[in-house]
Length: 418
Image 1 (tube, rainbow, N blue to C red):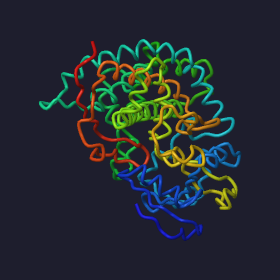
Image 2: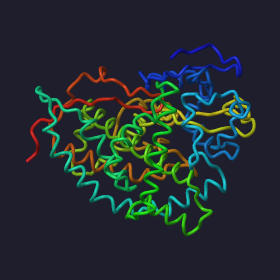
Image 3: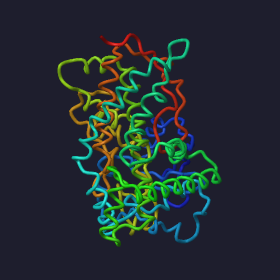
């Protein structure tokens, strides 16, 4: 996690991102301090660009000269990125996140036809039931000193159960799914572990597709299979598995970190927690401010310049990769004012890019918002006297340059309401 004077290829500052994610927000501040357009060094000495201003990134992701297709990465095409590069599994995938134009529209249309606003709303009672069951069980997980790991016993299982039910993941496959998904956003693993995990998760999802092909249910996997059968050229087997991978992994990781980060923020900002106890429903605002202030995904890979693009006086050459540093732009003072570092749920302009923007905006954002809002509202209603069970600065970060959260969230629940 060091800052060099300049990149040898660009003449602009370069910051080496910490693969262990030990200081996401400090790193984000350093990125902003180096300028609006910075080079970042990734594992394996691979370099990419990072655009650290909200407005500039907002404009860049809408630029038609920017691609999500990894075939436009010059270094990849020249054979300069080895097959065992630790982050290769986040690049060489086949789904709507890594597609452009007609291909992207085709893939996204198929998912959006099944993952509708109505279906998300229908998940409200299921989500509430999952949350209620987990809340009832929380006291049984307390250590002798009364401490409960809220991440392990609440924030983690809420989205995992919701997303597994939504995609029809059989119960016997869920433990392996949890283990595989936990590794996808890690950036500290060896190439061997990454490669083995990628094979395991693809094999698991292929088994799910095979099962749902034989035994249809009221789930998105079955719906996508039916859509493929109705229009055989619409979705290949690889695209179907790739779609399940991105929806399951991103759908779980983002919501998990969102819930954890929101609880941490509220328990360390009692004045903001007090605002949630008035007559006005402030929980949607808590979710949006958390997404801005402590983005669940600190850095999002990758986009690629298809031709030379000038951003803030710096030329990003054709073929170069670009990271979206959501942690950095979330606290951009040019967008959010001089108090951008403050957690304020009454903020009038909490606009953020944490779910992306434009044609590649996250399809699962409405579900993540629904899950987090229900989970937070019910958690603090049940345990209004809850406090952190550890000093905030001592919590171990998730070892990732992508996921921005902590590995445990010890709390003392206090007496339940009522």
